Image (cartoon, rainbow, N blue to C red; front, side, top):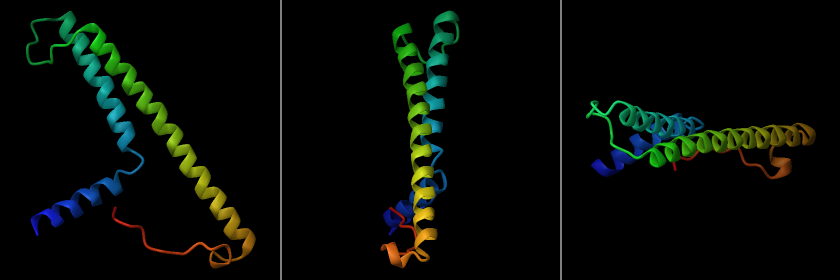
Length: 107
């Protein structure tokens, strides 16, 4: 019972953040890398994670990569939606091209 409720809650949050999850992760990697560099520059800040310069720069580059991939995925999704709408408009109805109108799934 609790597991199914938890799965529905997480699924609901994930579907609301769809399109933003990759950006959030990318910014998280960049900020973590910057915190590692700040810790190297100011070693008295013991609350920050201790990392090497290579690890910090690797996290920053991973974050930039994630932001780039998220943007490309978003553009691809938008292009697919526009193309599908154009096909539906040209044919006159969604059922004529074999597209079923269904509710979005939770998974």
